[in-house]
Image 1 (tube, helix red, strand yellow):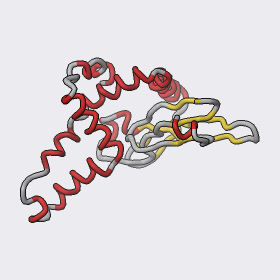
Image 2 (cartoon, one colour; image 1 turned 90 degrees about the vertical axis):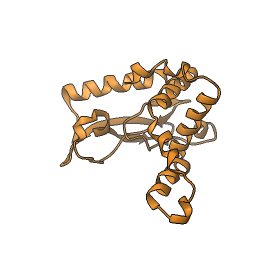
Image 3 (cartoon, rainbow, N blue to C red; image 1 turned 45 degrees about the horizontal axis):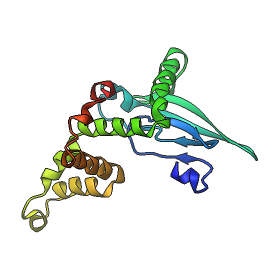
Image 4 (tube, helix red, strand yellow; image 1 turned 90 degrees about the horizontal axis):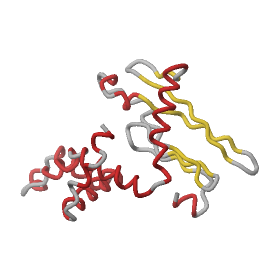
Length: 180
């Protein structure tokens, strides 16, 4: 929304490995994440949202930019555009994701619950130890670098630590089951 406020005509964001919502804000489209385009990891059907995404089509005219999405799924061999019942299920899923976008309080509560679920990034902090730089263990350094250099991972870890510091861990559980 900030980018729209300062003059962007559309915002297409990426990073999350599963599709996120989209909205029209001040008449301009914002896509929060289209999901993985093609990122097979063994049995991708195990994690259904990992293997779903959508292509974004911007229709640009002199006075308006509109958004059209084209949902798809992939497996280890191919990408397939969703149709029929699969497309209808995906569209219903997107309605659920889009619903809270106008409520910043609800978005914060969902994010806090997501932080409560996503503890693997916090475990990565345990890779720091005395002698880390002396012995040059690249695996440990890469894990820490991923936490600190990736803006999304850093925000998740920072918010998780703030929840603990502010003694709001119990509150952060509010939407855990709903998200799962």
